[in-house]
Length: 379
Image (cartoon, rainbow, N blue to C red; front, side, top):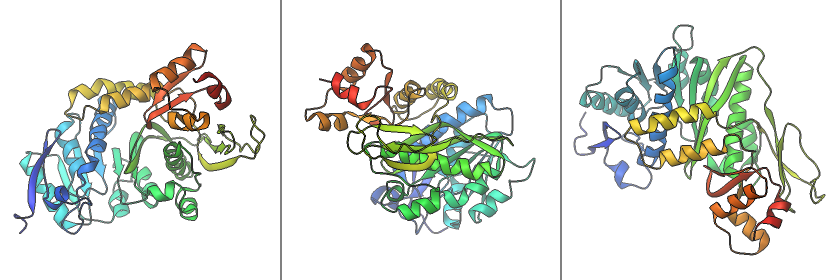
């Protein structure tokens, strides 16, 4: 491989990774040599925490499939930093990226790292038979993961974790509703809590694809960033899968929002006609026990200091209602400067309402208080 002048070594977590120099120098990571996205480090940090927490309790195969690995950053870190993992299988269509991954594996003295060059679903299909399925499967594409979900679900063992990334933010934010309907079986609406709608559309798509295979896919952890959405779902073989699909109904007039199995046509607060997002996942976004396991694991790994506080927010919001509010949204309605997040949550709690911050937005909060009462209570 004649790339010595174009390649450099970085350390991410506790793992040395060979990457193209241009990946650190350019705003958009190049794909012509081999793909590596330095901005996804936080995502990989969360993965290390989540995967480690999962494998500590999981009694099935402790294998990891990275179906679109690029230079192998995530797979290399899993192989090197999670002691419970037995073997990591990575796959990519770029032979240069795979070669870099292999050399990185040698650099870290890894014996549990295997690379293959194949189309994503062909790679995953090789692990879809009984006895071959993996404990964790990862799908991290450019754009939408929709076309690969069936293969990913089939390759995940009963009780295992499927982690999925989506980067087609314009589609999920309502700029191309026809494309969103085709890929995710639902459509969004533009709101201040658009990130939650996007995540619920992704989860809804996974849920529907899994259901026709008699499989239930339940989220244990989700995270979002300005560049991506990422969900972690537990895969369970169940013939009687639950129907947890529905709609978010939003009132443009007063800001009221409802999340339920059925559409709400008329706003219960102001009587205006409501707009709808969906069909989408209307169940919980987090599994509290899994989050607590992640919190216990975080100090054991070399990860960003932002991870633990973010997971703590997830714990606080895990039992809260869907569709968060933002301070800016409320301030705009009141035509005043926004109050602090801590004070706003305290006001709601002191008046008998449940409330918490949300991991989706630094100025966001969840509550069971309706918008008309929020406006009445806030200064």
